[in-house]
Length: 102
Image 1 (spheres, helix red, strand yellow):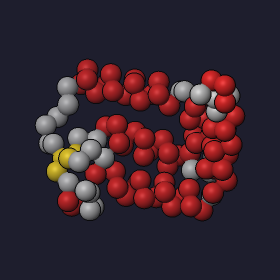
Image 2 (cartoon, helix red, strand yellow):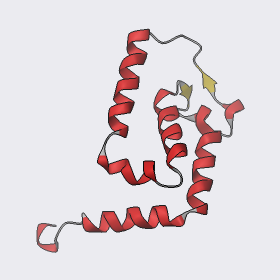
Image 3 (cartoon, helix red, strand yellow):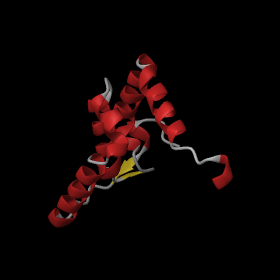
Image 4 (cartoon, one colour):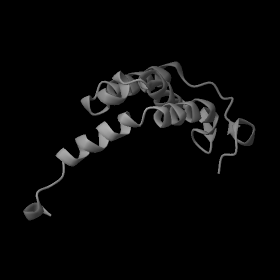
């Protein structure tokens, strides 16, 4: 369990430049998915992108432990703007399978 930035270990081994560029492209492609448009365009959008990117680039053990500060800021933003999650839940309900398909 991550108890803060000081409780995780981060690899100091520099990433291969090509590997880093591939990771950047994968993150960019993932963020282009319409499935995250609401999160990106809402009041917490910048924090979502920063948190998402930080987690995927993290080399800490446990993964993402070095992203705790920005993750907590994103969570706080979501608490201040509950409509963001309400909108996501409503969108999910529209994707529910008909009872005959279950």
